[in-house]
Length: 401
Ligand SMILES: Cc1ncc(COP(=O)(O)O)c(C=O)c1O
Image 1 (cartoon, rainbow, N blue to C red):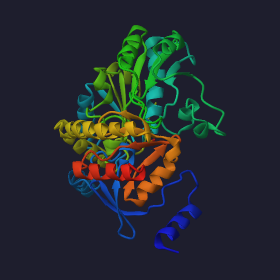
Image 2 (image 1 turned 60 degrees about the horizontal axis):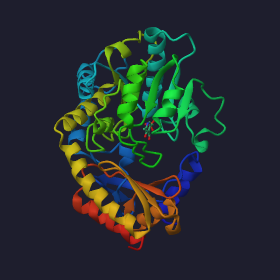
Image 3 (image 1 turned 135 degrees about the horizontal axis):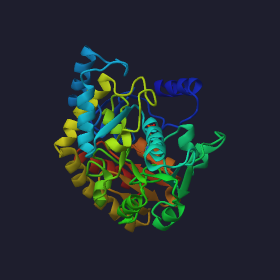
Image 4 (image 1 turned 120 degrees about the horizontal axis):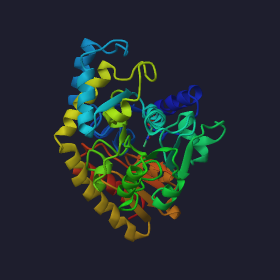
């Protein structure tokens, strides 16, 4: 048995089968490239679902992490530490908001947003106890906790995990009329991904997000934007909402905020909204820890230069031009996305998404399928144009173009 096969067999023997990874075993990584245990190199066109926007082993981020690791890594929120104030102030400023609740994973931040919206509904809006409702979109992906999967429409994500958390109304993504009809006086929030990543990089119709903004304002409902995957440079702007000139009431952030080094997530909003919490009502042992804050501060410094957003916009235009050309070949039925983020629907005749990913892997490119014959492309924003072109050439090769 090869080293790779035996490592995979051992992983399969001792880890619950919650994933079906491609048969590659990564040992090291740098920039947009990963190297396996036998020295074979792969171009990473997934970037940890956008957690690696700044690439693998980013020097600035590693230096910030190392320096912090020598000082203090964890205090818990029982005590203050000297990176916390800057982290909160700078993240609030980046979002044009006032306050932050620091958490770790994306799902925790979404849970925090759900709790925030409910508490705001009871304490500020005056919704009767236990009556708060949150409107969400079909085909959403917001994480894996019991409450979050309660409002998923993906049978795989939900089956056998009930009883489910009540209090959510599901409406079709992009359908304002359905959203309007789903709202009552007890609606406290609309929770949306400004672009639905896991659903296949679905961009809503132009004007949808501004209309949701207007409707939520009219009805005194919080607009909560889950920018965990779409935010922090991926689409060519700091936030995907910016493409439509929309500022939500609440941003939910994660993934790239931790620089691909540590899990860092946050809910960011106004003092009116996040000021509803009192000590003891919410928290996390690791949320806002010194190491997380140090890495996130460096991430924010990098974003402030605008260089990563500009790069995603410029290379993204190139990516979409190249992918768009494939739709004329009959092999690709649709391409969606913004910036360095694309969902590519392969005609089923040329294989399932998984089969395409396996063939790409054989050619040294790592991507991930989603929903049957869709592959999504989301390289680290530091990828060179040459490497991106090489990756696209491999895709054309797999499709026989
Ligand atoms: C939009 C969105 N929200 C939430 C999550 C959950 O994040 P995590 O896996 O860090 O819990 C994800 C993960 O893919 C996501 O894409």
